[in-house]
Image (tube, rainbow, N blue to C red; front, top):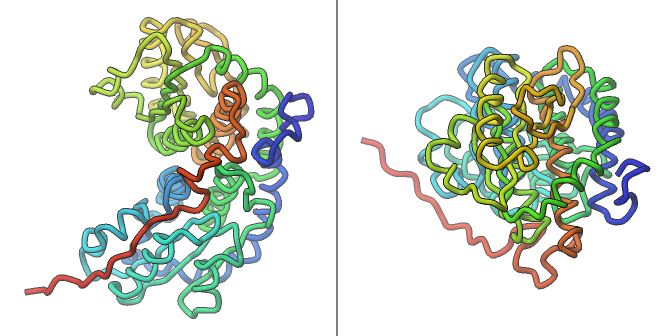
Length: 376
């Protein structure tokens, strides 16, 4: 955490949130060295590009998919490993070759290994790009040296030692953008990240001080994946004592709005794109009417009254930064809020489940054999 923050040095989680701007510069150097091999994997426009992972790693794909599609000029799909493993026939629907981009902190989750192996068996000409934080993990070892694969192992410090993924999330997302040639000024991004961290403790403590029982995170387009990651961080670090929910600005009105009560705090991730932003502003104003000014926070907004009196959490946006790059800055608000709520509840953020109800690397998954259906 920033040196003025009251969490500085208290836990791995706090340190790993605070180290992110510095790690982004090192991630960029690792990806720069891997770019020639990655370019060979992409192939022509017929090749499907599927981004996969589980939990936070799946949300990486959701955040970056649209910016990758714009850069490459072709559809890019984010499909979780949990979906691939449970329904492989729903993923392999034709004979188009696939580039499978696997995101993994450890690469030791059963679904991470199984998803890649399943598609390798079912899809002719499958290629693999593995972006991982652990060069010694099963996924990295499985595909290192393979002729149809590139493994990008991020710097060791990005392999979070805390329970929840923080710097691993932003490190893998940035690596994906750079791997496919999305233009990101990493030095400017790092400076902006340091600025966000500078007053994060104050903003996050204010939200935790409201003693929310429910935290609703809303984001549109790529920021819906960010909202899902924010809700997960809340659930993980508070041991489920603060319920995190995620939706889009427009989707929230279609039933999920029923969750609002007097102990709800709503956090809106304001889009950097004007058209999308208009819908974010609308829902912020509406929620102020439902919850009051103190229980609505707009991340990325300025305190200028545009949001009906909602509290603002400013986020500087370097010129030309893609939406997915902005998400790496905005997620700091989610991470620090979850940490503040965890500490306010007296929970140890590095080990919120000391009895092992939930584990850092998922356990208890049985991978069942899959036999492809007969065609014709």
